[in-house]
Amino acid sequence: MPPVPFGWREPPVEHVGRRGHVRSSILACVTAVLIFTGTGTPNAQGVAEPSGYREDTYRAPVPDRLTGGKVVSSEEAHRLWQAGEAAFIDVLPQAPKPKNLPKGTIWRDKPRNSIPGSLWLPNVGYGRIADVTDIYFRNGLSRATGGDKRRPVLFFCLAECWMSWNAAKRALEYGYETVYWYPEGTDGWSFEDYPLERIKPDPEE
Image 1 (tube, rainbow, N blue to C red):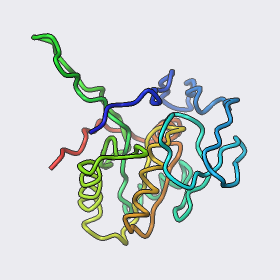
Image 2 (image 1 turned 135 degrees about the vertical axis):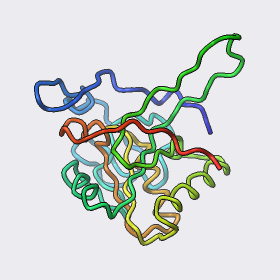
Image 3 (image 1 turned 180 degrees about the horizontal axis):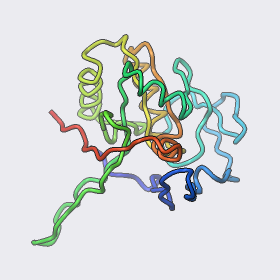
Image 4 (image 1 turned 180 degrees about the vertical axis):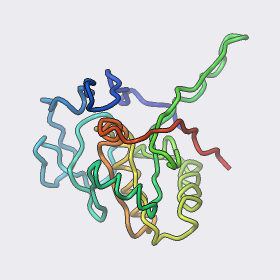
């Protein structure tokens, strides 16, 4: 899988929920940077839906729409999760283990707390993916849906994460009929005090 690019950055503040905690600045503030990457109609933040995939600066304001898919709020995502009818797909990227680490160096992947029952398919949300990553994504989605492209799938990452938008768009192109995009991701989920659990990436086949 590809390394995490310069355009990816983690949020500066971890937040737990609305009960006395500070919400991440990503959700609390509207950035002054206006990003136009396509010819669609901009949303309130000045972000137009691009015609293709987003290929750089993956942590940035996102559109409020996904052509062919349905954008859901935290409350809607929670209802879908409770119903158990949609496959939840986490696409947060994961940095690879550096090569040529000094002997004796202990490498630990950063833990990921995600929506319970989600399948974590890291690095499938880049604007361009290698053939091996494309196969990994297709196989992961097939396992998550039991091979049924009619089963709903929901994609998420963090707030202001183009990775989830790209992944949802790609799933539509794969032929999945009901695709949900949850743009607030685990930032919005944890802010609502919905449950999280530690998950690991789906292993490559």
